[in-house]
Image (cartoon, rainbow, N blue to C red):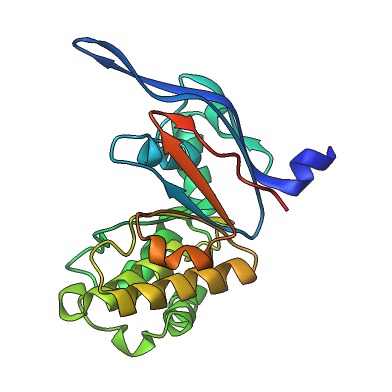
Length: 234
């Protein structure tokens, strides 16, 4: 294994993503190349429609690039079949959404256990204890048996982060995870993300909230599908 692949957890090389429109082809990303080391908290910024969410989707394997390559932890994601991709994503990528996306009829504990059930990543007898440990990590263990609707927005986002950690993925991606939270709650969520990077996770966050810039080791800025700054690797 060469030095670059060892150093960088995520490498995108000349990635273009095009979408067909009635008026022609729209290029959401244009020859994007970035390298992201393990254990960083990275912000992805840019105006609406700049390509931020497309970049996250490419990294998560939700979208495949039209051109270029995506390597994560040594795996070329664009080469995986759909069935292989689902299994790979479940074990390697934790996703945190702006609107939480917790299943309303399941308890918080059951929501956190769900990814483990889906990927069969831990023995059944271990899943409940692991889920409770993750809820304790995000400071809402006492909410384990409650339904999502009974929790505050901040508590639901913490539950969503615990769910994203269920299969111990190396990469966490979050699309505007604090967009619906007050500033104090948002700060506590960024503190939690920062703690995750200190434990070795790599966290990429699409955000507009510049007041939390001190939490980020790097910022990737996108305009019209092009990276307008080169993130500094360490």
